[in-house]
Length: 294
Image (cartoon, rainbow, N blue to C red):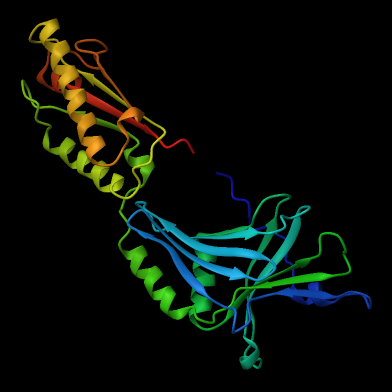
């Protein structure tokens, strides 16, 4: 997915933003000490989401998802989407009671018309670190409808610490693979058995572990195939049995049965030669294709 909040090359200083014509004004959005709250709204091995409300502006959140790579995304769910392309500076600002502390530059960014803002990866981690230090990451930009006015959107560190600890604990327990890693999976069987080989048993465990927490699927296809040894009718029955065994496992993991379509192909659609042991091992397979619909 194309990032909707990207770094741009030209340097944009907060000084320039704050240098307004005499009739210009600064609109500020930030939760007060009494209003500021943070909530861990999702806490599972597949996703962690830490949310913060900014009065009159919308919601913002940090999120990290199950993946083989460490990841962090900061998303802005704005009540009013950007009216046009907008250059933005993100700075770490001290709270009012530490007004003598210096501010620091985090990133130059851009909002795109009608899209919520995002800050990704290293810059999102920088924001999280600044909040941990009690600072307020703040977005500065020109008003979309009055170029004389500027806007500041601050993310408050008040009441952040405890929920931040819970969020980082959640991140430490994320599964080390994503849905994309299991959405198309091939399982292989030992000869003349309904027993998966060791590697396929590990793959199946990964699928089951993920589905414990996110079983909602739009469609799941289970296609079963055999090698060409043993007779066509027997192999057709074996492939159907294997497909239905996998379907029952997926149902036990929480997927609705009416979302699962099984097909036993028997000896059709070989992907390797049946003249070798390795080729026959590859042909004895069940292919699971999962689609979440988004």
